[in-house]
Length: 286
Image (cartoon, rainbow, N blue to C red; front, side, top):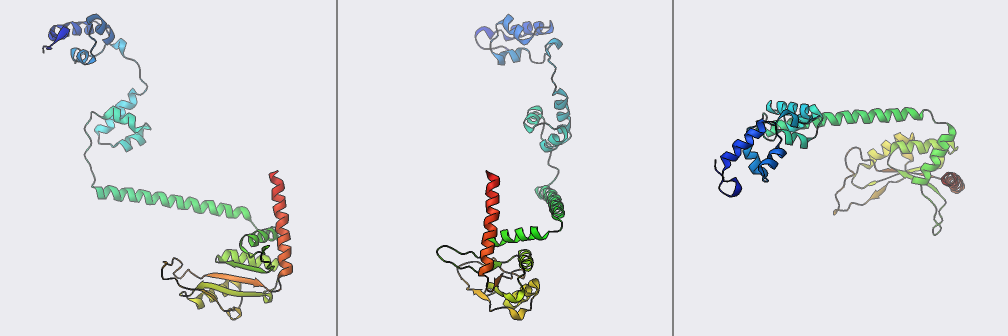
């Protein structure tokens, strides 16, 4: 093949000289300098089909990985499968096998999606099991509550969820509202620890007007271990047709309101107890 211009016009003659030098053991750089070939494309064409001499080959730690990647690709493996098998990056795999034909798709899109979905569901199941085990282990760490631990937990719970007096509206009453039956159970256990009898408590349900009010009252009466007959008239939330209700279904029971009668003295002690806890917490930060 003759080259059409300049110093490479006698391409075949130049190639014969390049091949002879290559077979004599010269490197590409040596051949380039000898023949004054500055164009890499021309040099590649001159040496096409001629392997480099052994002495120019540098050991490469990735040679074995590269060969294995090419072997797996020829067997129809995907980049993801090769990456998992060999532990190398997809970018490296792409460089090593890009000249090889792409494997034929063995599964339809729907089949592949179903396999991926099953894999994801299995992973979610594993995560859920790990979550349950973690919660159970944490629960076991608590053990049985001492009276003092219950006392402190109840103070913090009330100050987070109970009604509080404000400088602009002094209402020193003990009223607690919550929708979580476990929270209600802790609060009632705390009141019992403080010696507050249930005949000093008044119970009332706060709930959406379209909910099953009777069922909610029976549920909360059972949770609080009181007769449903002692419940005061429920406080109903009016329906707003412009909003979409999310608090629906059999699990929706509204909130339970628990008020302690003649609770000013108790409220003042709760506020004092909380102040003591907060002061200790502040001291630990200094």
